[in-house]
Amino acid sequence: MVELQTLFTIEYGNKLDLNKLELDPKGIDFVSRTSKNNGISARVKEIAGITKMPVGSISVSLGGSKLLSSFVQDNQFYTSQNVAVLIPRAEMTLQEKLYICLCIERNRFRYSAFGREANRTIKTM
Image 1 (cartoon, rainbow, N blue to C red):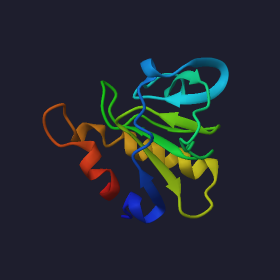
Image 2: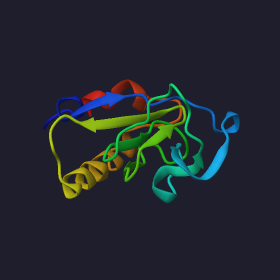
Image 3: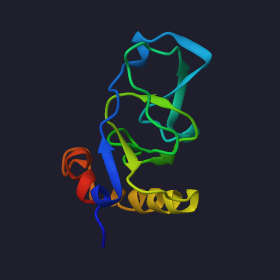
């Protein structure tokens, strides 16, 4: 078994609050802890000085009702709080990334609201 930190650089996203951002239907994807719409909850105006997460990264929800919801992102994006971003260390196919998303989500049963925390163990999954 290989730990995620071996295959990916793991970051904890931008930790932005959607209610403090300006919406823009043609803007940058905003990924939150939702399990719907590939994790994208809105599109927002670009923010000067804030780094966008790269295309092809995997977003992982570290909280919410659908803990460990994982999605491969098609566009650059910003994240809310409690979202990890997995950036591949080497070239990976879409199929490989989708398989990893499935593996991450299948470990949801190991976590609960008041028990083991996903943000502490995501690197060693």
